[in-house]
Image 1 (cartoon, rainbow, N blue to C red):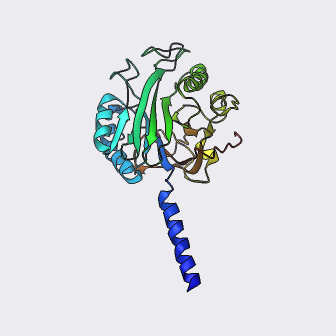
Image 2: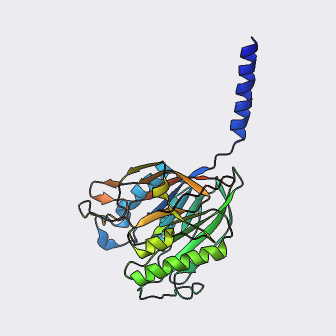
Image 3: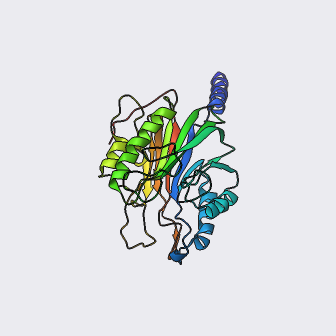
Length: 295
């Protein structure tokens, strides 16, 4: 009888502890949607958008960083992503012109605390600015969010590096880190994007290089407890092309990574995009800031 009572008390205490311990894990997706190009048939946007809708309805991530989103696509995405809010700006003018890198976030999970945009150029505050031998302006969109469940604040930065200029990619990586240091103090940061660079480049090494004084970033896949699915992220709408890995989720030292996946979504010859979505489940640890050695 005594043992039974003690066991009952233990279960009650354990239940109270479990109920009061907030869930600090959430999923992040980085996804280049491919701009709406009629010449992509049979993979033009009208043929793919239902696949995009179904994918996000199934996965229901808490945060999505997207790239190559044109205004008409942003309208479609906002309509299909029920329960999300987003921050976005066109890269050409900082308003509605040109491709955007919107950050979507679930309103039932996060409160919006602020956000903004800057350009990957020598004049990052000037909308539409370009530098370093690139043909198009490149934008960064960032938001500061707070978890409703835990009260923990954190930042999300989302971007798309130049596809033609290694000089631009390398300088963009340095500028991006400098801007993050200016905007963020010591808070948690998630960085998503199509970086148009592979792991063997100076650009990638800049992003994950040792930085003793400020924010150090790690490739989420390299830190994940579990990984699954494909190795490439860019498929070029061609399963036989071989592809490459140029899309990433990075985290700073305030996160551990539980799971990472490259989600190979297609239906026959129609692909969700010419890039596969990158998905990571991260755990926010405000009181146990675990650093791991950089890769």
